[in-house]
Length: 248
Image (cartoon, rainbow, N blue to C red; front, side, top):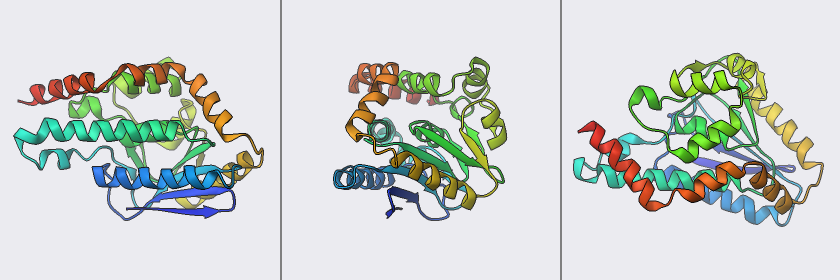
């Protein structure tokens, strides 16, 4: 479901296969296990950076809602809660990594896939295929307040933030670059990944203290961390109940 390899100073995490890389509990557990390895191994080689990318048409098409539906009506809210809790843990893990992080968007990044990309310090994207798309308005899902805080921090232009959230626009790489959402756009997936690896090597060469880097990021994104901390398990359950009630 995902692989982790070391290339020089870079940890390259790849979502493998030609599917949509929907974030099921199994896939999220695999990514979390890979990130745990990154944390452990980075203690031995502290001058590091992480690049995350994907194979196939999709970088990531969001949470695996079909998995939630597979349990039947009775289990739907419980399964949504599992997805939401694991995704929050995954987001927190990426946001707290003690090194620079780069998302190399290899294809479509929708809903949770877009949000997962925003958890990285830098976003690079291919120009020949793929869009960024917060689909929640179109599919009838409310974006939790803590992810809204992340979106406010990362999508800084008011018009871009409005159109991303309240118009559910699908943004190509060039459109996302013009709106300041991504850092650079590249011709193909290979060029995108190579550019991400070069950026990672450049950042790792600065030999910053990883724990200090993570603390600086946390301070920079203090509104995001405060929102994450404020949303406890009970508030997440209430959010899930609201989604289920709206669909009955």
